[in-house]
Amino acid sequence: MLIRRSSDGRLFGRELLLGGLLLLAMVLLAAFAPHLTHFDPTALDLEARLQNASHLHPLGTDALGRDLLARVLYGGRISLGIGFSAALLSSLAGALIGLIAPLNRLLDTLLMRVMDGIMSIPMMLLAIALVAVSGSSVQNVVIAVAIVEAPRIARIIRAETLSLRDRPFIDAAIACGSSTAKIIFRHLLPGVLPQLLVQATFVWGGAMMIESGLSFIGAGTPPSVPSWGNIMADGKVLWQIKPSLIFYPAGFLSMSLLAVNLIAEGLRKLLSPHEAGGR
Amino acid sequence: MLGYILRRVGLAIPVMLVVAAVVFSLLYFTPGDPALIIAGDQATAADIAKIRVALGLNQPPYIRFWSWLARIAQGDLGLSIFTGQSVRHMISQRLEPTLSLLGLSVLISVGLGVPFGIAAARRKGGFADRFLTVFMISSLSVPIFVTGYILAFVFASWLRWLPVQGFSPVEAGMGAYLSKLLLPASTLSFLYAALIAGVTRTSMLAVLSQDYIRTAAAKGAGELRILFGHALKNAAIPIVTIIGSGVATLIGGAVVIENVFAIPGLGRLMVDSIMHRDYPVIQGVVLLSSAAYVVVNLIVDVSYAALDPRIRY
Image (cartoon, rainbow over all chains, first blue to last red; front, side, top):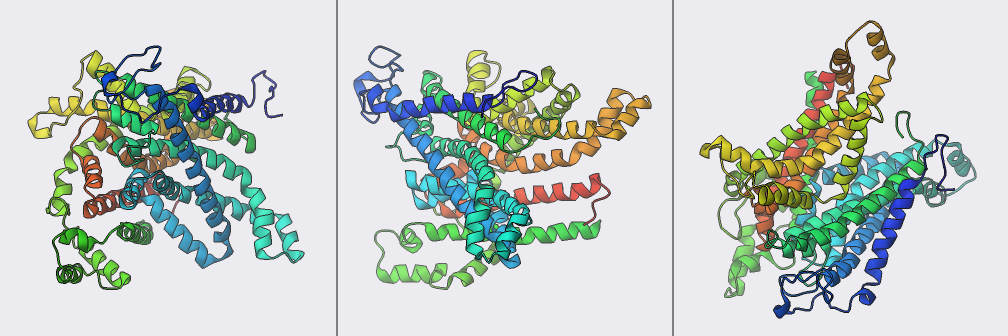
């Protein structure tokens, strides 16, 4: 049902298929990291620094002798995990704000002004500032990214709620005597869920981008926790001599971003009729 | 027209207030006591108390916010904890590299993105269109600093056409200035141009399907005249919008790119301040960038009225 052929033979849902398979591959690689490599990603081996690919170290070693494959696989857990958690958190927060804002004119104006204000601060800068003041940890990065991405979701969910509110089924619910809470959570929430899912998937990609940027400049996960951005930060100094230190984690990160963006694009096409002139 | 402008400015003020509130409240989340940090290890309780009063830390939050706001409005952004210099001075020193980088990026992105989008819209499904789709997908999937390293590797390390990193001010010569800026600006433009080209393509497609375009063609107008004289003007509003809102992405990307290419700009200042926990500097840079972003969006809003005479609210 998700994958079907159109009248001109093109395959619909190919983004979902491709993206889904790619993401599955990435997640499996990260999840089975302990089985795929016996190295500890934080174990130093100063006698084996900057080695090229070999049987022992399939991707070589970094400047401190740590096995690159292990770092990339375990780093995938952190990067994918942070992206997912931030997307989840910002979706919850954004959906909540977007659903309750239209209840009251004043509340709406107040909430949306605050959202506008947060959106007026360039995302990267706000994330950096938030992590700087709260300290470098996986938890703080997730919260910072969630705060940065939530306003956009709130705006979109609010727009969806406003358009759903005028539909007859809401009138019917009110006429039946449903409480406001029931209308929001039983009727409106399922209505905005498709759009929320699409946006959450886009945020997953955006969150991974922001996290990698943060870790790269040293404002993300602490050095003891490998994430793809972190690994690239460590490889920054020596990149001209050994570019693989940057390009291997970059490759994994790009594959994951591609996968998530494809899924998001596929979901978007699935859940909203495409305007004329699109594909 | 003037009333429209004033009204847009008026709407921007509450937004800036919220930005100021967010930036100010950042300090509340910092672990530790600022007075303790400034006083140092050897201070007595009396010293710390004196510093608290001097910093105004003993007053309720809203008074502190108000006095902070008043100082900002007069241009006093405070003193850096790390260097002791005025934040304003530190920022002004690093303004030129960042503004040069951003300016060149905007020029390249708009100069390449808009024509590319138009070319893609002209022949739907054609070469430009497909290339644009690939371009957009790759710019969304490849982190900006990775693009930077790829470009630096190819053009600086391998081909040796351009310098690897650094910045040269305009006074030292246009040649060095431009050649050092070209790689970082191109990297930033990668993402920005893709955004602009995508929106241009969508907007032009919507306009080109209109009846008045068909009429112009039927009357014998040449393709260039139709595209630029009729279509582009009407398609301009979403394009100008994305140029404005893309500036935030540009500013964020500049922080990372300045790190990759060792450019001594505001991004570098931001990163250094994190390491030193230099909160006044962080606040100053965030405030300034947000203000710039709000002004850019304000200009975009005002341009709507200029582009479309029907807009008068």
